[in-house]
Image 1 (cartoon, helix red, strand yellow):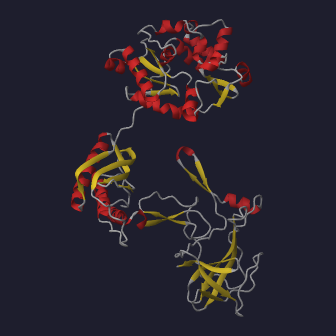
Image 2: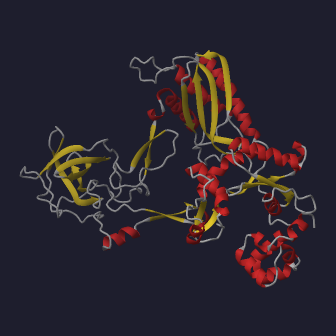
Image 3: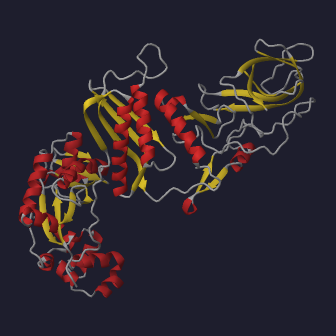
Length: 573
């Protein structure tokens, strides 16, 4: 069986202690211990001099060293502090795998051939990490990552083919499996060499899968090859201009050249982007930035168009004297930079079956995107339907090209399957279609829970969208005013219609007056439908009742009464 490839492992002693010093400012030169589950997982050199060891309980460690500084174990802190060390190693060698915070490995063949041998490579890496991060480290090289990790604790380079002999004399505790090591010692197996001499089949039958993996490590065979971390490719393209660009035609030429460079770089990696960041710097140091989003994959022509539109919008801006456009830069552009975002593999874009991604839609998208480039992203908005009880809550306006996420979770209003509200009876109030004042534990609460909408997503998982008891039943209104219109509702005798706290209507509604308009006869009405929202938060609580009314001229309205004030919430078509 061939030996595993040579591995180079860099190890930073007492890394959790060093991470606490880097992030939290705890001096690593003091007696410091890092605790997890009330046991010591790492300690400083001075604490070890006082007799503190890994695995001790907190009270025993403090008994050995009364002046001990205790720090809680934080894996996130250790990983964040170790990232600059990994970056420093990647400046010398390529293809680094992080074993754990405080240890990283790479194949030894490349660095040794490039830097003049394994010993020279180890010295170069240790020196570079010390200079860049002010962190002490040790490097071990051996056949396999496991053996290289043990060699790093001694700062040793194991010669090729000598890994088995190097591991044979190590105690079984070096496997890092406390329960297995205790069992092996009770069976009389004290070293890795004794453990490796056992038949692999018997080890699997007696100790299970984890024991078989430990047996491979003891024999000098890794359980898997190195999974090196590939540094992300730099896809950004930049163009410097000696002469500042202050004309639209010059900007268009620069945009086309830069867009072609970006598209070629993305194509070289088999990538495409769905968002594009455009950055510019003027001769006076002013920085401009804009992000463009596309619902498909940006081609070279699409990138060039968006860069040209954006530069046109910047250079054709207003002069600051009350124009609607953004202020024009005070000087020409000397630097252009394109930053691809939303990068994904170029697998092609599936066109729609009925042409929804066809030429007409693309022309409309280009026109609206150009308006955004001139007037700003908020100049063109589209509506997104979502959850909510009132028509205004169910609609959110988002800028064109942005992610279409509803303001409130939940399914959008369903298509109408019921007759229009133009036929409500003018007689007594009808039974509420939906009850919104749902208290926990009530029968209505159970009904509301059963009304939740379940959507099935990938791999069999389900997502339950929250119900909205009290939402307006279909059909949905056609017009929703930005703010509800004040109104007055009177009965046949000319008295204001009042709705009590118990939803009792003082008299049948007969006339409606909207704002300063003329009164209109009500030919039919339905309601009241109560909505009691967020009663548990007094500052946000809201209670109102809704009515659907049909006027004599055929207009159908959605009314609401809140705090004694009538409002027109929406108009039906």
